[in-house]
Image 1 (cartoon, rainbow, N blue to C red):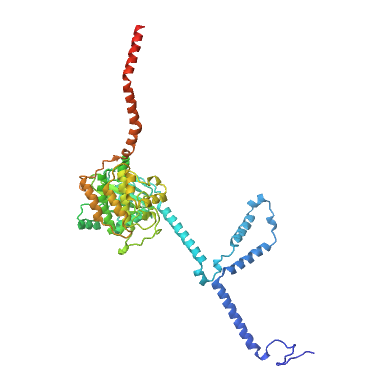
Image 2: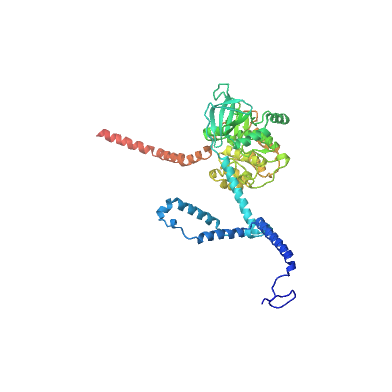
Length: 514
């Protein structure tokens, strides 16, 4: 006999279910709410994509693989196991799972709101940004340092204006570019008769930056306007008469500028006279004032980028704008930021501390580099010349002497009298601020006054009669260690002259009597 309970019965045999009349409506509502909850749960899981869920899935897959019985084919000797293709596939699969089988990161389990303020997350982001900066700087240096293969002489290249140039002779080359004597393709000329020179380098290398500089700041019209405005007879900014691409290279064409100052100094391994250095500095200051007014810094001043006209010896050109930097775009000077560029760009013996620290070079950078060049041209040495292989050591030496100009000059001049004009120039340029505009008139006035006292002027040819650099060190040492001992020996021999004469006379008489 079955017991049927009423709706209001409270006996222990009462079934726990709702009345029949409301069952359909409530079940429909409950199923709808359950489906909505499941959908919201799935969508939230998809949105969050928590790494913990992924961790559980990976652990389940790996546990399923581990619980599988071992394959009979895996029971192979170690020698055959290396050559079996099936075993290799199994090992690759296991390696992939072993790679994915890693502990979840603690920072990944943090909520998005806390993740922004978490110190661990900030540390990780800082490490990532630093690693990105380091890798990008390495990539930049790799792009810039490139070896250019020589192009055969007689090759004809075509520039952007469809003008053809013939490579006559390779004049010199560096790690980044080649320099040829060229003429127009319809002419026949020797290297001495060529009126143009062509520089060829990597397509995306330093010549690309130099081409942009000439197109923006050094057009021939701008140079002519500057000459008339400042009443100058000459400005040492070369005019680019053509540019283009040849295979994987970029080339620029210039009128022949003569030979580099470096070749002049290398011919005799010598230094220049103070008069010649002052003449060079005044010409270069005119060129630097022009490019600074055009919002650019040269950033790589040294003897290899300075050309001297061999015909007149009065024209000095500043070339090599591959590292040129626009420090004042649209009239607003850039801020000083270390590490914003690749550090130690340019010739490390002469670049400024701004370039050593990776900051964008400014006007003071060029003037300081010119000061280092003047000091080296006069004396033939710098305190950091023996550290040329390590950029950090050179930068440390320059940092030490930036506030000790007298010590810097005395270290280079040694026992000889230092140039007062050079010391005053270095004192002025080393005290400049990063964004400060130099007083070019004051700088040139000090050098020009010293040049006039020597009886020189800018209108006469450069005094390139070089002085041997060993005259300051080798000759005094030779006199002390060689000449003085010989003099002492000669004095001793002269004192015993009578003794030697007497001995020889007695020997002669004895032999005669016998």
